[in-house]
Length: 158
Image (cartoon, rainbow, N blue to C red; front, side, top):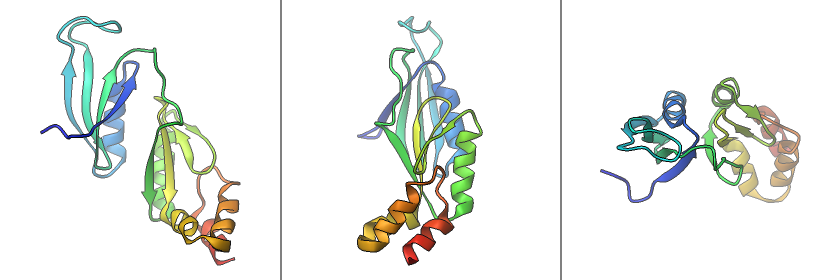
């Protein structure tokens, strides 16, 4: 059954490879279906992969091989909540180590240009707490690329 709301992600031609990577990297993720084009289209031929149905951490997605006209930007990202430094490292290293790029404050971009926020829960909890705790955690985060859980927890304590 097709979900009522599905995120459609535009890829040049690698939607299936991206979906396979996401399914292998994140829990509750899977490649559901691959659909081939029934005819030629502007960026492909009949029989090429046109769309891919998949989930990322339980979120239904559709990958569309639409061609090079549109690129991903940080205006859209997946935010993955983590519970430990080990989990944070695992996701960060999977994305960056597979042709991705580091950014600031827990953000990175995968090799297809899709942005990810690998965010330890301790950081979101600190920001939600407000006051001095939030200010200290925020200041610590602003100096980081990949989030350092121990440093955030130390900042929370003051």
